Image: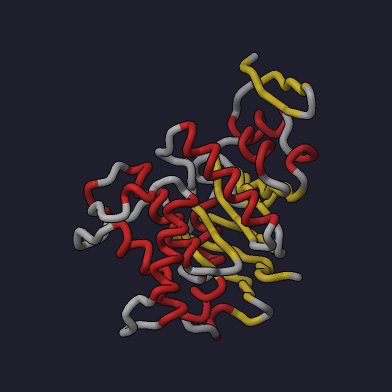
Length: 254
């Protein structure tokens, strides 16, 4: 079943064409890695899919409804967003930040109930950061903040989670645990779309990859079919040697 669809999106900043003729569909169970070099338009595409930017041409449909026809709360009930950075105006606790993810469900003006508190605690446990529960969010490291924002997205109970560079700032252990969690969520029927600079992680964890190059979608398919040394050279202007062994693919500088 198609949850989100983009039809012939384009976006400009002044005279610069940032994205051109982007069409894609996202379905339940998709765990999608969005790859592209710096400036390829990844973050812009994510914001268009969220309805945070207005396309120059084309449209985005959520459950076959154009995004402009839906309220922000209606969109938030279906799509959760984890940005690269987030700095709150006040020193909220980690529990308070995560509980904000329940607002699309409960609405404003309702005190958190037992189910909301349990959802917050379970998300923190799932991400191995339950020890941060009472800490001030403003006192956390960048990597810890990223995990808190992912916990906030989890308690939102949306059908699609969009993540902009989710492993940025995470140590190696938390990177692996997060990628495994995203795989589990997709296996449970959720949709995952995360931008990345790491083709090896897409090969290891995603079941689908979208590739942006110079503002255009140049590939959409299974990671093993899409990501190879030719693509690496085209996207990142580097010469690499491809190594395929025991069902895994690696790249080494030539």
